[in-house]
Structure formats: structure tokens, C-alpha cells
Amino acid sequence: MATVRRKQPERKARGDYHHGNLRRALLDAAVVILAQHGTGAFTLREAARRVGVDHRAAYRHFADREGLLAVVAQEAYEVLVSEVKEELAAAGPSARERLLAIAVAYTRFAIREPGRYWVIAGPYAYQRYPETDAVVDEAFALIVTEVARGIERGEVLAGDQIELAAWLWSAMHGLTHLILIRRVRVRRDLLADFTRKMIGRSLDGVLRS
Amino acid sequence: MATVRRKQPERKARGDYHHGNLRRALLDAAVVILAQHGTGAFTLREAARRVGVDHRAAYRHFADREGLLAVVAQEAYEVLVSEVKEELAAAGPSARERLLAIAVAYTRFAIREPGRYWVIAGPYAYQRYPETDAVVDEAFALIVTEVARGIERGEVLAGDQIELAAWLWSAMHGLTHLILIRRVRVRRDLLADFTRKMIGRSLDGVLRS
DNA sequence: ACCTGAACACCGTTCAAGT
DNA sequence: ACCTGAACACCGTTCAAGT
Image (cartoon, rainbow over all chains, first blue to last red; front, top):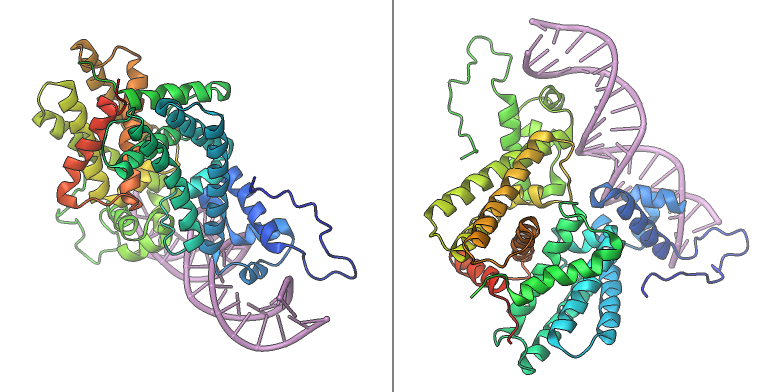
């Protein structure tokens, strides 16, 4: 639950010149813009406009436009990670079930919040933003852990954990991308089943013999 | 070979007011900008500047910025398709070999020309641009054909051809993305082997039993 | 046909100043 | 501390005009 619903007193009472929580408000506005109009359309000025402050105020809270997007990405990963964890908590012990649980949480998140997804899946490298980079690593570590567990249980082929995890990640990402650009169409209530089918194919293989 | 090297007489002689082939020049400039600075950095004005014309001249050849990028995407797909065909021509008859040949051509193209790749793999839907849309379909049809052939030969599991082709496409795309954002690092001379290994896993499966 | 000057409504970012 | 006015160097796009 990283989308804080903030219904605090807003600590603004007399005359009121300050905004309360401008940082939070700008981040929320950014997510709305990204979801509605895609990554390219996001501008600092538009976000500030929606919040009702001068665009210059954003620089109190973010180094620049890219810095704000890095925080959006960070929070997006946090939400994704927490949802993957929930799905894993509900999944059984078999490697197949657990790896598919990760994939289901992944596609569900992306289709529900395409704006956030495009930011985390964009052509950006967040090495310059340590906190964003850390949560990316955490997300990846979740996959590695489950792959390692599967190898231990003898259910996943022996091999480099990291490489197998990267392989699963790329399978999930590729599928998600195809759905989002509408090259593949899936009814939302069938998304989990479709994900299981497609990622299941990668887990099981498609070649005979 | 779609990157025309144009060394024609340039048909500009006396006084010379017209440019010769502005359309071509703008497209080439766009690819250079995209490769150097990424999709977001591309501007019509910068492309015009490099070519040495007023930015307004671009509107003689393209409806707008998006229209120019759609043509860049179209040509990128054309190059990709021709390289996939070459790789297929050199590949043996087995489904495994042929599907891996497609994947090898795909990652090689993307890593060699990231600018072009980000345009074709971006969050764009080119339905509004029939010619671009057509070559996207052609690219996809190549995969479908090979999947169908594999099913006929009894080497690929029976199943919906389209869905299996989408599955392979998503696997290739996901892998390419991971390499480009440098989450996975591969030496260029090992790229083909690495691609074969990773996509091979998707073809063969990673689960025991 | 092909190209441009001038203009409009936008950007991100900086400086100096206001409370 | 937090916010803004004015300014700068950019955008994409349009209109009216030049050869």
C-alpha cells in the first residue's frame, strides 16, 4: 500500500501560504497524468498546474523533472513488490505455482496502472537514483529467491539463479508489453488465466521430444 | 538494407534553393539523434538543424513529429524483417534452429541500433499509420509462419499459432529490453550465444518432471 | 513545389525576491 | 522553509509570404 491516501489535517489553518504536502501532491498528480496520457506527455508544469502551485515550487522537492519521475518509479516498484508478496503469501509451495504467482501479480499491476508501469519499464536506468535502484533490486531479489527455492526443491533445472530469474523477468515483461500495446488482447477478468498459460509455456517449454 | 546511403547527384546545381531529398535527410538525422540521445530527446527542430533547413520545412514531408517517428519505425521494421529473413535463410530446417535464428537476428538488431529499437518497441500503437502497421504485421507474420511450420513438423506443441508466436515475440522482446537497460550485461561477441541460451530455455522449459 | 520569417502557446530551469 | 515573478533558451505547430 504505497499510494498513501493522505487524509491528515493538512496542517494548514491561518491565512495559509504553504501547501502542506506539495511533494506528495505532485507525485500523485504525476501518476494521474502518466496514466491518462503516457510517459511522454508528463510535464512538471502540468503537474504543478493540477496541484495549484507555480511550477517553480516543484524544485523545492525534486532536483528536476527526471528526479520526480525517479521517485514515481520508486513508489511504483514498492507497490509492485508488496502485491507480489501478497500473491506469494497466498500461493502453494510448488515452484510452478510460486513463479506463476509472481507473473500474475506483475501483469495485474501493469494493466491496472499502465502509467506507473511505463515509468518502471521505460528505457531508463535508475543507477543515478540509489533509492529507486534499491527497490528495483528488491523486486528482482524476490524472483531470485523463488527460483533458488525451486532449484533446492528439485523442481527447477539447476543453473545460474540470477540468469534464470532474469529469464523469468524478461518473459513477464515481454508479455506485459504485448498486452499494453494491444498486440494481444485479453479481457481483464481473464488476465490471470492468460498470464498463467503464457508464462506456464515458458516454464514448461513448447518443443516436443 | 534500408539505410539508403544516397550518393546520388543530389540534383541541385544552379543557385540552388531546394534541398534535394529533405525527407530522406530528416529521417537519417532522426535515427542518429535517437541512437545518441534516446527517444525522448528527439525534436523536429534538432533534426532540421542538423540537416541545415528551417524546422518548418519538415512539415512538407511529414504531418507532424509523430508522423516522422512513424516512418522511422516503419523503416526500422523493414531492416529488422530483412535481417530476420537473412538469418532464416542460413538456418537449418528444425523448428528449434529456426526460432532461435529469429531471436538472434532480433537481439542483434536491437543492440546494434538501440535508437531504432526504442522506437519500434516503445509504448506506441501505430494503427493510425497504415504503412507502419503493415510492416509490423509482416514482422509478426514471419514468426507465425515458423511456428506453424514447427507444428506441422511435429516439433512444436500443437496450439494456437498466433498465441505461440506472440509468446515467442514477448520472450525476445523481454530479453532485449533487459539487455538494453543493462540489467543483464552481455559482451557483444557473445550476444548470439546468450540469446540462444535464454530463448532456448523458453523453448525447452525450465521445470523438471 | 519547396522553403522561411514571424508568431503563438507551450516546455524545463535559473535568479532574485517575497512571506 | 516554502513559494513566486520575470526571464532564458528551448519546444511543436500555424499563417502568410517568398522563389
